[in-house]
Image (tube, rainbow, N blue to C red; front, side, top):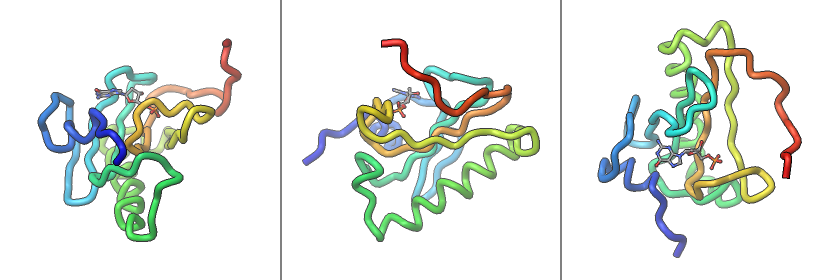
Length: 119
Ligand code: DGP
């Protein structure tokens, strides 16, 4: 069994987080290390470790990530100016927390999509 992450505890409200949205399928909370004025993580309530582990039965929750992202972007006032939605997978993707999550990042010009790591 995959080890539980901090995100599972946040979803169950057993760990502190600034939760901005929650329903039966997904939870959204502010990133602890924001990279932009708006940086929210939207996560399926089921602990899917990575994009490789997505099952057909996860499709409703994964679709919900997008509808919630659009709603939160509108609420944050960045829908028209624009934003970026990101899902990192495994080491080369830069995944740090192994509970699949979508980053909603915006509120400033984000620049090119990919930068080379310095190391
Ligand atoms: P990723 O590299 O895609 O796995 O992004 C993980 C993000 O999760 C990273 O931007 C920092 C954020 N993060 C890590 N631990 C916590 C936490 O305990 N609380 C919150 N709110 N965010 C966290």
